[in-house]
Image (cartoon, rainbow, N blue to C red; front, side):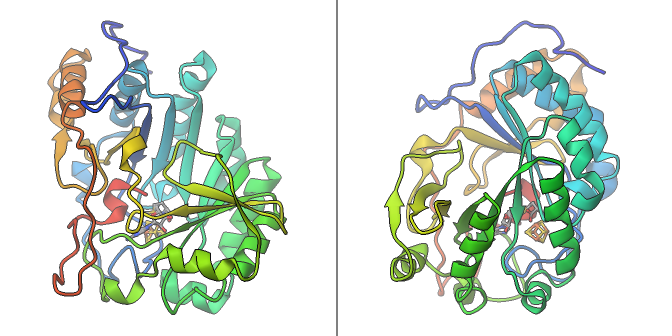
Length: 341
Ligand code: SAM
Ligand code: SF4
C-alpha cells in the first residue's frame, strides 16, 4: 500500500483568495442503483469502466491531498457503495485517520447498501454518514428515485445506527413533490438524534424534466416552517455550506443549503475529484484540471503535486448558477453524479 510518497512538500493548499483547501470530495463512481429525477435521466450513459481510476490510484490521489493539508475526505458518487471492492479504499484511507493527519473520513450515500456495509465502515473509522432521503412515503420514494426501495433504505438507516454511526439526513426540496413533508422529516431526523439539511435543486446536467418545475426556494420553505416551529439561528458549521438553525420544539438542527438564493462561496474550502481523476475547483463551473495524466506520469508524486498546485491557483472566487426558463440548458452540463454532492 503506498505511503505518503516522497515527503517533499507538505505546505497547505491556499487559493488566490486566501482560502485554505482542507476538504476533498471524491466521486468514486458515476454509476448508481437509483435514478433520482433531479439528478439523472432514466437512461444514463455512464463512463466506460476503463476510464476509471483504480482504487489504488484513488488512494494515491487522496493521499497526496492529505499530504498537502486536506483534513476531511468525503467519498461520494454516483452511489459510492456500488463501486466494486469499495471497502478496500476505506480500509486504505483509514490509515490517515490512524496517523492523525486526517480528521474525518466520511461518505454521502443513498443508504441502499448500508445493511451490508455499515459495520465495516464504522470499523474503518467512519463516524458520521450523510444519507440522502427526500421523502418518508414509500410510493413517493419510488417516484423520486425511480429504482429505489424505501424499505431497504430504512434498513440501511437502522444498520448505520446499530453500528454506532452518527447520521445526517439530506433532502432536496422539490416543488409539488415533497414540500408538504418537511415537518414530518424534521421530526423523523430529530427523533433519531440526527440533523436534517434541506437542499435547493442545482442546475447540473440534463435530466428528463424541466428544472424550473422542480425548483423550490428555501426562503419560502423557511418562512412556512416558521408557522410551525421556532427557528433559532445558531453559529454551528460542519465545514460544508449549510447554514443551521435550531428547532426549539425538537431540540434538533436544521440546515439549509441555498446555492441559488444565497451565495456560499466566500468560505469555500473544498475541491472535488471525479472517478476519472478530473479535479473541479468549483461545483458550479466547468473549469477543471486533469490529474490522471500527472498521476500516471511517474510513480513519485512530484508531477502530481505540481499539477495540484496549478489547479488550486485557478480556484475561482465563486459560481454563478442560474435557473432560467428562457435558457433551457443547465448552467453546468455535467451531472451531480459526476462530481458528487
Ligand atoms: N448517491 C449518493 C446520494 O444520493 O447520497 C451520493 C451522490 S448524490 C449526487 C449527492 C447529493 O447530491 C444527494 O444528496 C443528492 O440529493 C444531491 N443532488 C443530486 N443532484 C442534485 C441537483 N441537481 N441539485 C441539488 N442536489 C442534487
Ligand atoms: Fe443516485 Fe444519489 Fe443521484 Fe440519487 S442523487 S441518482 S442516489 S447519485
